[in-house]
Length: 71
Image (cartoon, rainbow, N blue to C red; front, side, top):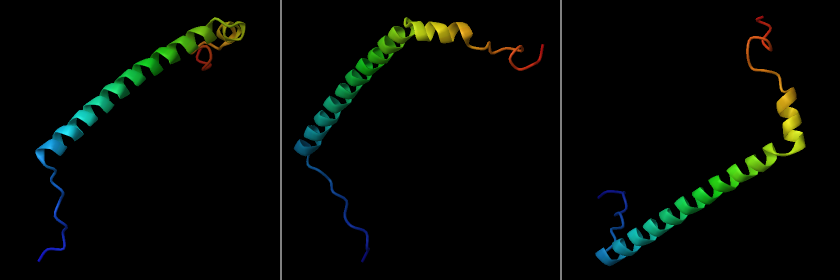
């Protein structure tokens, strides 16, 4: 005899119910992901409008040859 347990095989009704739950959860996850992306973009836009962010943007070293000492 084998020491392997017999895998659980759900009946058709259980399989359909689990598939529907998975689909619903997937759709909710996609919706939440979209909301999160929108919130991140809104927060980034609001931050970029602040005086502190504008100060950093003006005084940030350029990422070119100058900051690397190649000029």
